[in-house]
Length: 281
Image (cartoon, rainbow, N blue to C red):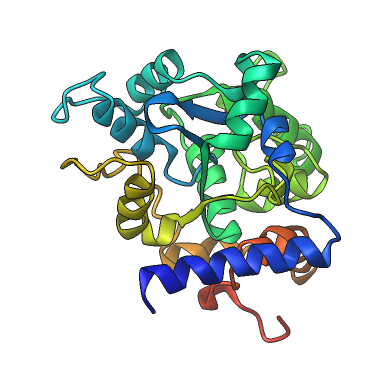
């Protein structure tokens, strides 16, 4: 299938799902999505969904717009910090400007299979210690451990131990996730922004190298550039790794996860990875 046909199929899947849910596509939804990054030079609103290649995009945008040299060795955190400094969120601009951007700027999103995104969020943000950013461990790990860890009082650390020092399992995290404890790193994409806003390009992390080139062409970027690879890879799309983690879930948990992820799966046309499929799914 050609790139044009692939993109048309993604657009049609999203359009059909919006109609099925009785939601008409409207730029008004883009105006309400404050988490778009505004790229004024490219006249583009780019939604960097967490765990869908945002760090790679950050380095690329900084280079394309001349804020750093293309060979600059930026850490993930340096890239994120510079991205925040150089590119505003849509929510930070005045109302009349939001309306103009929503109606006239190209709108781009990159997504990822919800099952691999969920695992990547856990492995990158909650499992590893020490990791590059402890904010999520500080916010969630102690709560998860105490409420969903099924640990005896003797097993529990002293209450003075900081949350980032608590280690939790994927199975425990899934119970926490299913209880609707939201964090943008694992929040459903359709909850982050209404998907029925008329995206001009829908990219996927699974085909990042091909899709980012096409997205940049749409933005009017035709110069040579580096396709940066993440320095903080969790390999959460690897079949063996996926199976290892998802196999720890009970059938009941797995079915609840399937139901919870079904909306994003439908909107963006994903199928359950074969490596984790169970006989009845």
